Image 1 (cartoon, rainbow, N blue to C red):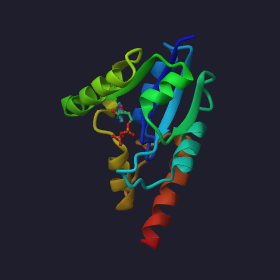
Image 2 (image 1 turned 180 degrees about the vertical axis):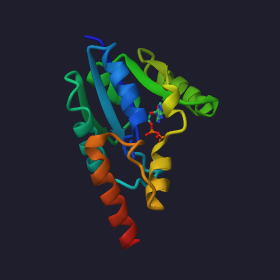
Image 3 (image 1 turned 120 degrees about the vertical axis):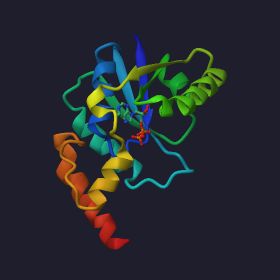
Length: 164
Ligand code: ADP
């Protein structure tokens, strides 16, 4: 079975992420969307909230499952029997960082291949931080977020802002 992992922060998942996940699921037997817990980052949503959003927006894709990892991606992949990591690329600015990550993961787990999927042009500009920023100013983010979670994400962000 060919298993791929789509790792990321997904803080929160956007339509750009979902596009990459859907395209990956067409090409692999199983796709694990992995919420990575990075101690260096302070996310807006907890790992469980992020995983819950992902489960809701991928419920229509039978070969996708969502998980959370607090460890090393290379180790997770080994344990899960995954041979491929899939990363989305928006622009050359993504490339240098992704290149470094891919080489590091290859060093840690030589069986592991990283493959890059080029974003659909309509999502080129889209990132989780854009969503947080626009929603933070009360802007309309319906075009940025999957329909199933839009209302909840906006409400969560408004609540979090109110307590800050
Ligand atoms: P970000 O915070 O920049 O959205 P994540 O860590 O959540 O990044 O992203 C996980 C993966 O999804 C990364 O490979 C990232 O390059 C990719 N990605 C994020 N946004 C998009 C998009 N709009 N189109 C394609 N790939 C994307």
